[in-house]
Image (cartoon, rainbow, N blue to C red; front, top):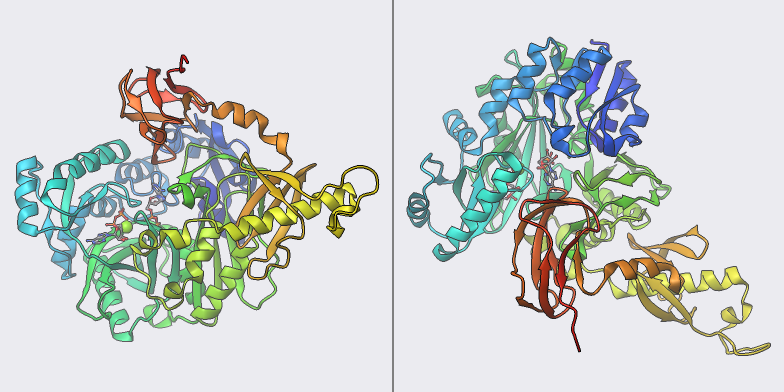
Length: 634
Ligand code: ADP
Ligand code: ADP
Ligand code: MG
């Protein structure tokens, strides 16, 4: 086995790879940008090399810089993790021509599978079913319109180079095609540097099931069974599990066989995932699943497979890269139990999943008391900063138990008491999703979150009440105003205080402590004093920071009524207004791209546009004024 591995990635996956290396006695080299000098993966690696400015294009996507870092640090091999350069065939080639070992599939396989249209052609050649669609090189609007008519609506536009759910647009009818096409191409060009698209028949109510495969590049290919990743928001996975719920053995066999057939067809080397789509409106059957794409890398959700097969897939990757045989034969790979994973993201489901950066004041899972195995894969710890430049995923929680009910139940319970404070959090949302009857029965599908937004995306008022109430009690206890706790208007000298004014998110609330205490179904899991006069209260996975009034003064001033400011560093990609134009509060004015997502910034009040202070394509910094509304003269 090689001695020293450079990990060309950051966050939880870099930390995950480091752990396996430590067990195998392999030295690790981290790389970091300006934004990550103090990041967890840098702290955990044996050594770390600086590779450039914060923007990914200048650091984690700078292949030459990373190869130079590997040379300089004496690394023998490079592991790309997922995302970033993991599916770059030219980077894989450059690594090998530099005399280093590439921990991944051969460059030609990555290239073949990298484009969805070409990958589908290979699937067809391998005898694996694909959905009907248009995959031609003629990308003219007229041709695409004609092909769409022939395929029929509704359909999907997909960027052939796409990934992570990006560059996909649903088109309901012919009239919506041109606009959807334009926005898909724009997103694909910005994100993947390749605007080519394909059309595909839409499955209205899809489930996403994928198969983990592994090859040694020498003719041996095995599968490690399936994962269900049907809980998605905006076509990005939220919760994944293995095995798939309600999966008949015959379908499992057919799907795994198809995946192996495809991998064999390209003499696959390393870890790969073959993704399939199925129609959730009918029962699973061996002839109604279709190939979506092959991901030629380790997947975010690989831990659920590791848990049910008792393997370490990073170790497998390293062994295969070292030229060794696969650690197990197909006959030796069995599954037992059930594993579920939830992705912990710095994003706000109640605000259109807007991602947010900032200081993580608390990142703290509760102590586990049950017999289930709980695994936290994290790229951050309390006190770390989430930079605004990268993905919003902070880590993952994985639970493994004897059956699906127990593992889901335990994951819900662990998430409910998980404190994530300082940045927006999706944890309460995860809890609500997994508590729903539909998810419990395994009858959720890819569009379910969108259809259940009211139920799962909004923070229940009862949670906020419980948090306020607890905070009020804590303040009172702290200040030793014992009359509070009696709550009977008792006064010694002067007026009694029977109500507290508290602030959450710069909004004022008046609470009478004890009012809703012991209100039953929403118990407070954790309460932590962050600093004098500020408490973090977690209820059902929703964390609230509750403070005394003045606290948010500065923030309120910054929010300003007349100015639209950039909430984070990013790039202006669209401007919906002209100077002088009348706008209503909430109207979109500017779209910026940041943290790999589009953020629509809205007018803070009714009024007229005074000035637009940025140009299309401009890079903006956090807090920068982008648009001024006119100040009313009267
Ligand atoms: P995986 O299949 O490994 O679970 P996804 O399918 O969710 O990952 O995403 C595909 C790729 O896109 C991954 O390599 C991941 O790093 C990246 N990615 C994940 N989340 C996002 C996001 N919010 N925006 C853009 N890309 C993402
Ligand atoms: P990406 O590379 O972005 O992951 P995929 O082709 O894997 O792109 O599709 C992402 C997700 O979009 C899938 O997991 C599935 O939920 C949904 N999807 C893809 N193709 C279809 C389809 N033909 N009909 C309905 N949903 C689809
Ligand atoms: Mg996919």
